[in-house]
Image 1 (tube, rainbow, N blue to C red):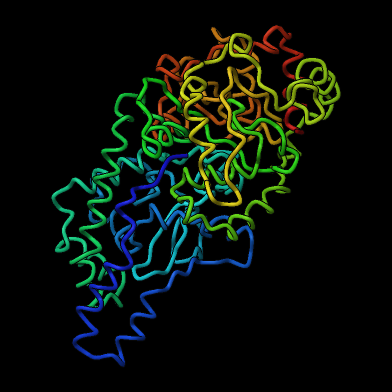
Image 2: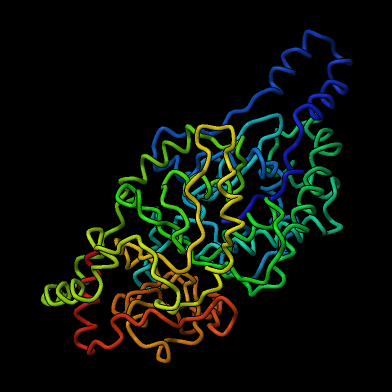
Length: 489
């Protein structure tokens, strides 16, 4: 994940209360002023009784540090439609946000709402951990929770916001009329407050954050379903010296967390506490140490501890091959990838695994030390971060839905992963959600995949598809059997 949109974007409650007081209290007296000041002290996150709905739309506290004023956020795609990338859908759909019918306030999955002096919108866990699947090009879209958000392009979302802030059209005269169209109840005092304080602060905050993210310009585009998790911590939060490493990695799945406690987590095995992993992800999504919504997050943590991955469609499994595949799995894979395996959750040295090392090198010993200062003075202070020299052995539960593969998403299907690197696709398109049930991955070529997908080039820094040769010496029949068994994981 990444840091939020900017500390300056968090509107000062004291400043806004002063503006309100000067505009209203002096004019209409104490009888109205006191209720207004009580109203101004609200801090109410949107809460959902249904835990799946709360996962999709509830708060993790990101609005407190990196939230954007809700009504400004709503109209940005209308006022600045030309700054959005070309693609399917309207507005934020072009950046990979997912919408469903009857969503609260019509928001996309992965966004939260908090009612304060000015309502704010933020991001939550679901934005990176909800994906879609279609069984055919003309089939219905299935929304799956806990799945890596292979369609969501976080980098382009940030780039859109930064471009908006630099655009000369970002003025009250352009944005307030758009808000009035979207919200007929947007009144006189709302307009005054937005003109005098909200819009100027929003623009300054986004421009400040753009300067903090200049490091992205020296690295390859991330593309959908990927994020540079720790460079924002290193450069934006802690102010460590910039290096040249590319930390971009695939978004992980978020299900079945209980048996992962004690395993070394993140791609490089830099932490073995599920709680710390969750809180560091929330801070990466825009929360601060003080704004973390601990109660809301605990509900999500309890839920994902037992959330199971979606089953592979039963009618698409050749059960006659599963037993043979299970035996091959036990011989070739179980030691590193089974929950009962001797090496599960342990780090395989980089010179042994042989995969692209940029993500490994981007997480430094100095950063590990800094990460362990987060939460100082709080009962949850971090203490488990460490520097490693390899990548961790991941469990394979729900592996069929975790494409593309390897830590950087450089191999499109499981069948390709069982081939030697020279036989793996050097370029392919990712972000297309039609599934390939034979090769186990998303369709990555063809006219429609090229039209809606992002071209991934394994020559780019951090994108190498080498290494992980396990299974590459199996016969074609053995690979077919193993793939059938992996459908059942």
